[in-house]
Image 1: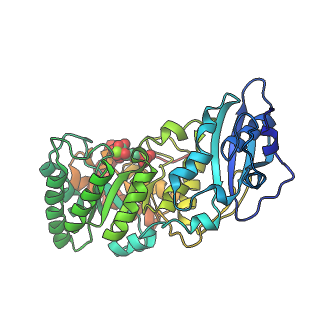
Image 2 (image 1 turned 30 degrees about the vertical axis):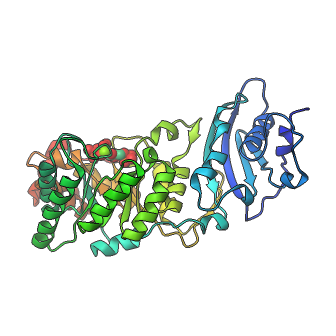
Image 3 (image 1 turned 180 degrees about the horizontal axis):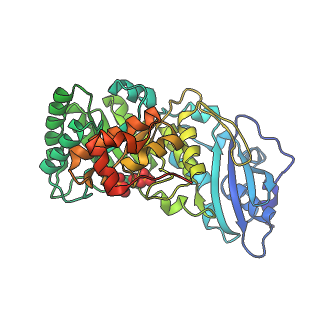
Length: 428
Ligand code: CAP
Ligand code: MG
């Protein structure tokens, strides 16, 4: 019995629109050609294994994936749709992002992009609200929405957390946000945090006349997440926040169902992504993560800042923004293209090391149809959180008008103090 991996390579093959396509960056291990590696990737991610088997049937040949294009280290593979169970993301990823990463024949392997056929796209919900629905909640059509995470990340009590939220809300912030590692620890219990924060949220709304909300982190065991989401809905909340990668795609699919029933928006935090998205040689691109999150149906997702404290260059951040917001992605050398059909846009969230001195530049680079999250950039303000919040809104005013930060700061004390503390920056 010989290996049959090469039967999964056919560079004359023309995939059809119903097939799922993957773009892989493949680095063969010593002793293997790119064709060897490409055949193994297509085989082991569809129906094959290391040897021919007597149980093979001619009809199953129709399910074989095909490596149909090899350019340098880039390999495109086409997958017949019957390989996949509609609306079952873990199954799909166990195929196209499963065992293949561990094969000896590849030194490194990275899934760069996926084109999802309409049959699969229509089996997923997509976002419940999406960008437009979220903007309707806040009755805010143009400017970036704002969010803040009270810092330090952990240790504040529920009362202290709520008080910080109140200061930020009356200072002009739209969204209070929990940190990715704050759930229901002894010093800040979830249900106490719900009652304390929504009480002060209602007070801040009355005083400011603006809609205010809270990205409360419900990350936990799945049934507990559902119970926590119910508690948020009962308290009049509009959102839950979920650490989508540490929870896993099954948990997220369950929560999309639950939030659909409860009419709650989902803010997706991507903690853990850099463990497999950062290496350009091995893992999965954040672009594919954003596909999966949009299909399952989060309303907001972190995309990076280009100019903040966390990695993510201009090309990546703008690529994520476009992939989340556009109805259609055109194919090019590194993109397979995507028709997002009726799947709503996801609100890109820029977060990580942001402060007022960076905001106009961030908006020049990424635009204003974003959510801007600043934690340290508000709670590090020398005059406290409310002043920090005001400084952030003032910086956004500069970004919207295209004005000059220093000039505007002369008439705005909070911004002036922020610039004295952190300065301003431009992207070269
Ligand atoms: C930002 C943050 C966010 C990161 C997530 C933090 O705090 O709360 O979790 O932005 O990264 O814990 O670092 P600061 P990303 O505003 O104080 O920096 O947005 O890249 O997913
Ligand atoms: Mg955080």
